[in-house]
Image 1 (cartoon, one colour):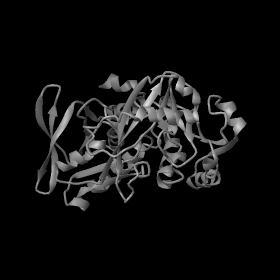
Image 2 (cartoon, rainbow, N blue to C red):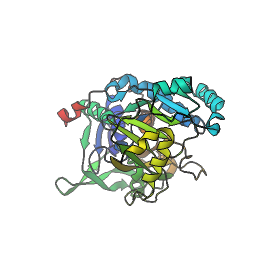
Image 3 (cartoon, helix red, strand yellow):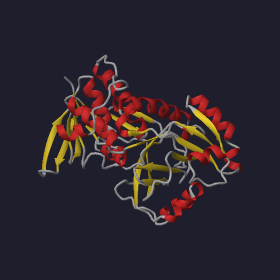
Image 4 (spheres, rainbow, N blue to C red):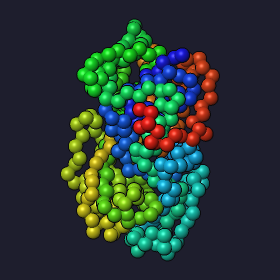
Length: 386
């Protein structure tokens, strides 16, 4: 039985689940606690795909498909509260027909609403709005949803090792044969052999790849989020324009989360929150919900998006949110290592499926993906098994 090592305790959980279902022996290593990176720090929006229809139709379609799959396999981690794309001014209403057309093209259900219908649903919205589209956005729990993948992987035999940092990738000639890990719990270095290593380290994928003298096309794009201590909207609120900064307000429990900003960083370990970003988010948030200015920030945090740098786009809000997996045997003449990068929390299962399909091809296995239909274990199961 082939042994697969996965580096990264974020999207790696979905991959561990997929590979364990297909009968592989799986060990996942994470340098800190699970979900201590990007996958546990987003605002919790389960995308319908509508956010991307105006400029990134591929990602829109990916999100639309995964939205429906996650509703089936992980309902306990979701609040199916729908979302609104709100037109505030003439510049937004100019995009009305194009948004409608692109949602049809991407297969995203959407319903046009008048201004009065919109305000009846969300009375805290700015009263001068022009109208909105209702879509199948939802709110996910940023920890409980991925923990369901980890829990199900554990139940199917995967091993998950936290606080186990990869400090080198072991090679023999032009083949990867395992990793060297520092177990921070016992302050001990050990080598773990593997038939194949998957680099799923999110913003740290470039650093991990460099251990095998591999360069990958990664753009690290941090973004700031701010929550206020009041739930001002029941549905997810988006502005009807091409995705930009501060144009989402996500309800989470008794909070409202404003997101997000974006800039390009060179190192995920040295990111600092720019001093003006919190003020900027409040200024943009009040354009959608004026009453948000009554509140002080409850919490402020950032997450680093690991984006696939596949073109010449320099604007961090316009870089595609699609994903890919790289076979370094074909790309870099280094056998036994694969990298998965890009994507979103909404598409973590799809990222895992594409990567697991590649691993099956590389190992000569003809095994069907089952993660579209297998309902995940409850998140509490992780703590029972681990």
